[in-house]
Image 1 (cartoon, rainbow, N blue to C red):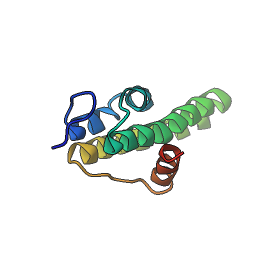
Image 2 (cartoon, rainbow, N blue to C red):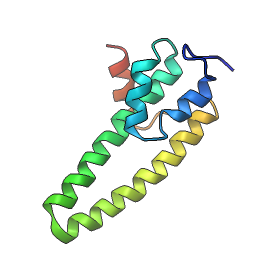
Image 3 (spheres, rainbow, N blue to C red):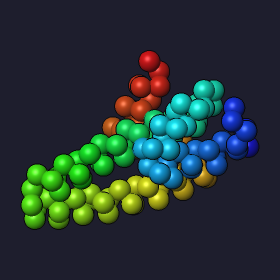
Image 4 (tube, helix red, strand yellow):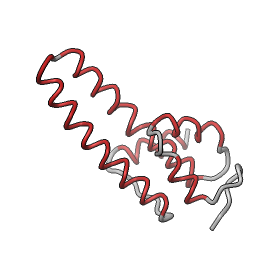
Amino acid sequence: MTKTSIGLEENIAGALCYVLTWVTGIIFIIVEKENEFVRFHAMQSIVTFLPLTIIGWALTMMIPFGGLVISGLISILTVILWLVLMLKAFQGEKFKLPVVGDIAEKQLNK
């Protein structure tokens, strides 16, 4: 396995990008400057989970009962994505979500 500039195995660092969803994504995008695998997973974490967090929060605040139900469904989706993405990164796979993965790659190539 390849080591990152912060001294972790790239699959461990890639999985850690998802541990606290977009928060660890931001941390790793700032800290890891060289490893493309880790930077991709960090950016995908941010692009995936930050909007889901904002949408879930906004729906809960704006729509009394229906917002709670929809927010609950978003939470279930978030947990499923969180587990799948962490597992794929840990396995060393550059698993790219549809649409979001492309956005993450474009952001990194700027």
